[in-house]
Length: 561
Ligand code: BES
Ligand code: ZN
Figure 1 (cartoon, helix red, strand yellow):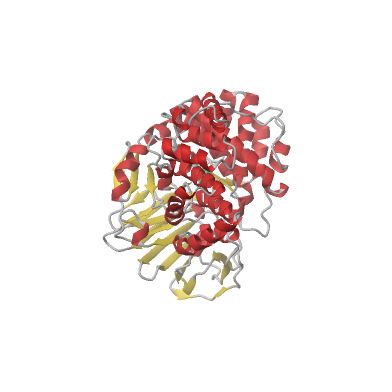
Figure 2 (cartoon, rainbow, N blue to C red):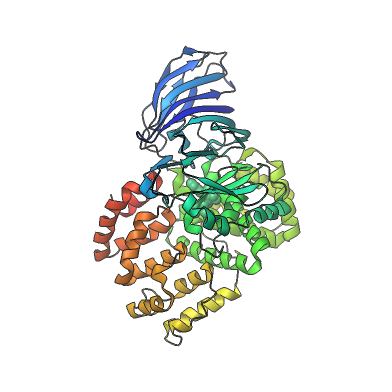
């Protein structure tokens, strides 16, 4: 498959997309049928050169969906499939007006990674495949249609002329406005959030300039952000030219902008050089997490970068204490599993630590030169761990135990450990507050950002006594805080202590927010307590219809449904 041409009509009333896709294919074997991935699609017909051809939809696999087998005439290079999606398509989320900031218009967005493209487009849904695409979307005229594409016109035609893996095709439709941030950067958001979002992400152009200095030219033209409603199931998604982002990173002080640095970094690691299979996912996320931190250092300074590293390291160590050994391996075996299950902190943080150790071994200038050549060498290719490793061995000489890092569980002995002066102050404050030597009102927290608050809260003994929570709340109003990362940690502590004054906010949080990473710890903690279990089930019944299919799958496991 080399090109995909979409013509789709959007029905918000029915929650379906309906229309056709034309696929251009390269015939490697002229006698073989064309096998496409689908999940929950209604196939109305398949044509080659205007004539109907025979097709067959195979049995539905729980993870992979149903194979669509098409008998292509031997000369054919193009096939057209007429189809429609189902309301439960795992790659689409349809929001009611109540789930948006404006409360007046519905909203639709896609999320294809890892293998959800097949739930709204029949295609070869593998990251090892690269295609260009164009699309013509028919939608209600009062709504704005966006796609991850290089070109867009006034009649909702889109064109992506650079070859991308299908998991990067993306669409969003809603009541959206635009504000420019720089010459090639800008932001889309619902009108009520646009100004705040534009302020928070005002440094975006500088971030692009910083990566370009480090790793070479940005090759995708524009870099825009789309801030989605809070039901968006992830922090961010690196859809090319148009990063999708949760509004929960709008902290007010830019302290969660690392999300933009991360998604932007994917324009090199991930979108330019892509993991060929999902077991090579660490090539996308480990490289990106490393790049993200380098960008943060360039734009916000060493200390900010170190704070982020210290927090990451504590999280990965916690996970490694709990994960089965097989799930601690960068080159993870996903046979028989849903590739979304490979999306843990291991490929991200362990992957980044590996790269940081190589950086320290060969020196930063040599490692930067290596990364730049890696991106140039494999630009617009999908590669496996083996290919990346061969290249690394050929280009760089060092004694980092690559095999151990990539094929064995745990963290190697000499994994780099960051230290942050600012976080040490926050940690010391936590200890003094816990022992009663420091009153909540006397904490040096006036200027603390997200990282310092998280460090403080995470170092406190757990469960923290109810009076201590009340004292903190009285002095710093944490139950009412607008920073969702801090609030998440705070609500977790409230659950552990059964601190009732925070439960109304907890309920609102669980209903409004769909970001899986923030929800999981809260439901998990609730389910560990008898009282909490009842509360969790009650809220979940209300909240579940508003969650994304991916979030529901993750939470159903916790709620034991
Ligand atoms: N590409 C990922 C999101 C993803 C991974 C979606 C796997 C589906 C399957 C994105 O770049 C990402 O890593 N997002 C993070 C934020 C980041 C700052 C760590 C997230 O959503 O938490
Ligand atoms: Zn990522």
